[in-house]
Length: 205
Image (cartoon, rainbow, N blue to C red; front, side, top):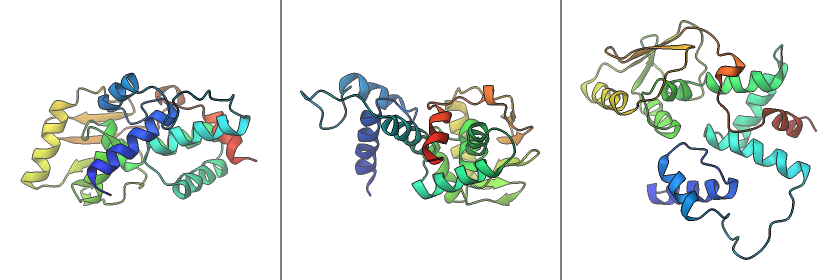
């Protein structure tokens, strides 16, 4: 899929969900200009069913973190088998994904960009190249940039451009372009665009 086709596909998803799940400002402008779902013009939308509401919440979170249905279902199963509250476990696992941590640190402008940086070998975990975006980051893991001029330059420019607050469960050394996971995030520290309980109900049927 070309870059233009990918942008159009994401635009349709944003319009269908009625929410900018990707965080890119261009989708805010798209929703202002075209607030209706694709294919919806004069037709009135019926009231969604309980299943429909649950499905939409699941899709919001899945598309936000850039996961396939299979990946998301596998992550949910892992969350369900953990001790504690399934919904929180699910969100915590999503936040601990390497691509998300790179994004949260400000090393990438979007999660999609973070995934590409990881896949292309720009990111190191504890000094070793990490190329799997879904790899989970643990407490005391260090996230840094490949010691190559091009990689350092890309990330340094992005860190300067992204004025995003780094969450308190992460630490960033801006000068060294290195991040550290200091602890597991608490539920109230995880911003979410979806109702996790509806997602739990969706997969629990």
